Length: 248
Image (tube, rainbow, N blue to C red; front, side):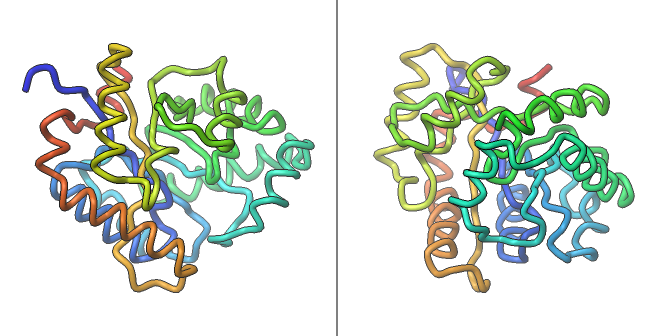
């Protein structure tokens, strides 16, 4: 077991709804989850106030968003606005400050920052995020996906953040129904062939029973079920750790 890859399971969208919150809590209690990034603008004030108490073992991060309170925004319109610099620097800076303050106000000092739909890597936002993260001593999770899987989304993300990679990252090609034993084995083999000893694995688990669209609900549940069902299989190749331990 000494040759296992040190991996941080990093859960996105904590705070969006109770389904995701409960899935993250369960994975944390199983000592699988190492980090979770928090959406602060989804009307769950009671949840935010209990963050540090309920998730004491996790590295928490700010899941920065510019689609405030909208779980399923118009993705195409959002991408067009991001690619054509539809957000001003002052607008981005103001949102970053306001959202970070919400975490500070409930006693949470986040370790890292990332973006809902990875907005933090787009040209109109990334310079502001870089400066903001340095000022506030936040590690920035960069979604440069190292995997054997091809997708246009992965190609776009890798193009946008190719110059700022600090930690190996994967998960874009393992979301929802794509999270299977066959695909995870391919990912493990890829990591070993490239001599990668540590990495962040982005996940989007959910317990179900929420009002998200049926497709999103099912995909989140598929991820959660896989991680629970295949816990022993995953432990053969991965040592699950906190994100901060990979950065040190």
